[in-house]
Length: 90
Image 1 (cartoon, rainbow, N blue to C red):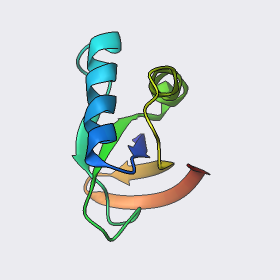
Image 2: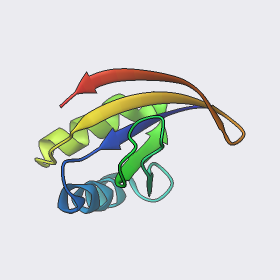
Image 3: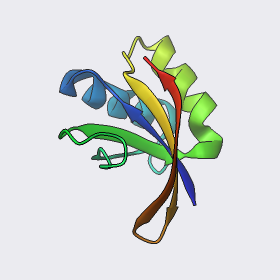
Image 4: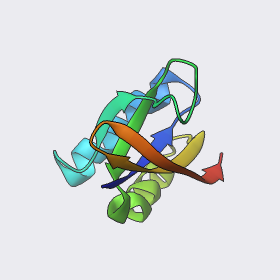
């Protein structure tokens, strides 16, 4: 399955992103997760969604002035991360 990960410059923006998506879309559209090692070796939190919802969620975050550090698409097969494609650098 292919997922999109949004990373943020601070924990504040990560939490704000989660709140915005939950309030605007409801549960089940995005989830806070640790940043995968394929994206960054540093600790952090990312917002993960199905790639087919990437544009909608990105628009929501921009509308609500959530600062996005980067957007990544990962294809995951079971636990293994297969392919990484950086879509945009904030």
